[in-house]
Every structure is written in C-alpha cells, then in structure tokens.
Image (cartoon, rainbow, N blue to C red; front, side, top):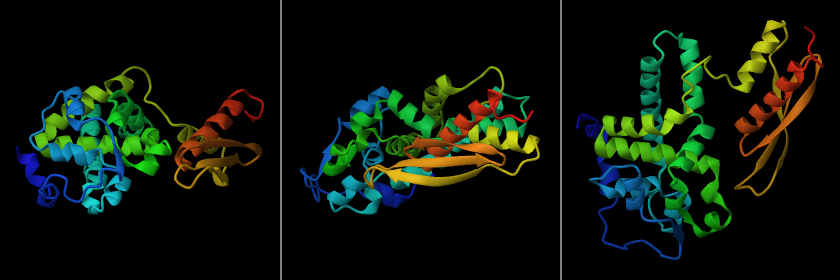
Length: 263
C-alpha cells in the first residue's frame, strides 16, 4: 500500500542478522511471543520483526548491545503521529457539529498517556514486552509510561506493515470504549481549573514540584497547585502531568463544594 512507502528502509534492515546474533539470552526478559499479540490484534504481520521491535524496551536493546533502532522508540515516534491523525479523523466524522475546541479536548483525552496505558492493558501488551532483567524485576512491565509508549509503537508497526487502514481499524476498535459519544466533550482538571480562575479574573493556577520520592527509574512526584486567594492542594503520580491533574482535581472539588468559592 502507499503508506508503507513512507517507511524507513533502515528499520526493516535491522533484523537481517543471523538467528541469535548479538543476543544474550540472559540480558533481557522477553514476554510471550509477539505472534500471540498479533492474533489478539486479528492481524498477520508480513514482517514480524516490526512487531517484535515495537515490544522491545530500550533497556533490552541496550543489554543485547543492539543499536538504538532495535527498540520501540522510532516506532513510538511514528505511532504517535499515526494515532493523532486517526483520532482526529474519527472525531471529525463522529461529531460533525462540534467546534474545534471541543474536538481538541476529546482528542487530548483519547491520545494522552493515561488512556493509552489503559488501552495497552486492554490489549494485554505487558505480556509481550521485552525488558532488561533489572527493569522487569523493578516492575517496569506495568509502568503506565512504558505501556503507553509500547502502545504507540504497536500502532506504528501496524501502519508500516499493513498501511493506514489496518492501523485505523485497530485504533478505532481499541478507543471506542473510551469515546464519550454523548454529552459534553471531556475536560481535563487543569483546563477546568484554569477556566474557573479566569472566570473570576484571577491569575492562572500555579504548579510547583514539592517532593519526589522512590527510585530514579520509578519516581513518584508530588505537585502543589495554588490559585490566588485560596489555599493550595497537592497531588501525586507517576509523572508530573498526572500529579498536576490530581492536584487540580482535588482543588476543583474543594472549590465546587463552596467552602473556598468566592461566588
């Protein structure tokens, strides 16, 4: 198909090595065979190496002394763009009367890391990830950030191997349960808090990191959010973005209760 002409030939050439060449079987923890995931996706890959690479964390590629292109990073880069296009097209078709702003909020909700991590869970991607031994033992197989990245990489692999329609079929099917087809488009907590402050003529909410705990590879962030004239609130999460959303949501709930709302 035409879309496969956009692939970088170097990506396909990377796996033209002899079986076992450059691979230390003790260096990484491979999950179940990618072919099982392909069956779950209801798609047969012409180039199975694409799916294998989409499931290979950079730590596993490094332990095998393979090139950076042997991990999912390049496919994640592509999959992110393919996902964005497919979701934008899906929303335009589904909500023909909505404004650009409303569509943008829906788009953000569907392509954000948290949603993709949930989709990866639906697709059971963690079962198939290849991780360095240390990363696997540290629980990174279930790290939402890694799952989201791998999800995008799988989308990139589907696009390169089968074209846009194959990728679209998988994305639409996977995101359908997350598509709020009724009522107002979703609004994230940070945006809602910003609009609350602006409606009252207040400066924009301010966020600052107040703590970071846990190991370097798996930190937990604590973020404080404040709005002028109101006591701050805190939030925690595996990323700064998640922590900010959590803090904003907590503050919004308190303001909505009326205890700190100036009307």
